[in-house]
Image 1 (cartoon, rainbow, N blue to C red):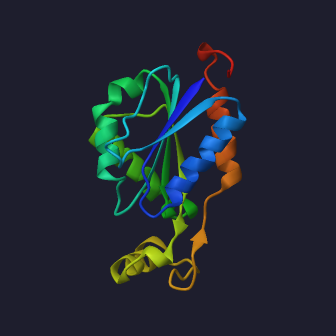
Image 2 (cartoon, rainbow, N blue to C red; image 1 turned 90 degrees about the horizontal axis):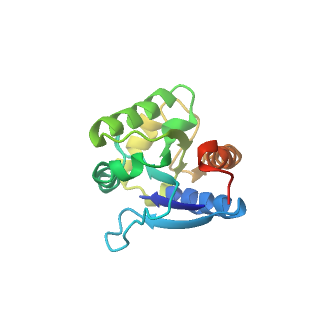
Length: 182
């Protein structure tokens, strides 16, 4: 089975997640291809794809505009396939803010009119070295509010790799109408 992965990354964590997912898809015996939504010269190919994995980070309450534009423009092609959206945000890392992370997906669905078959909220990472003063203050006082993590002191990865691998395995094995994994 061919499984394309469309992703966009801002600070690098979503790219790392997309590459990990690609490895998991290969380990399951499927063909995989990665497409960066921010690269307008790399056309996304739906041909022969039964399942599509989508991954994007959340910054300032939304996924990247180019990613959302792509989903909206290709919602019919995507709707014809099983899709898994990996929405990457720091809010997914904490029980008290996971509702915010879900809201970002709901708002994206409203903007794009695209509804993925399945969604996984994936905890992102703090990348202190890539933040300017304003971004570091937003991370500290809005995103990490009340949590014992100082983004100025160190980088911190919250992604649960085992949970992600489990979700990918389930997604690849789901829907008996598509047959057994190739």
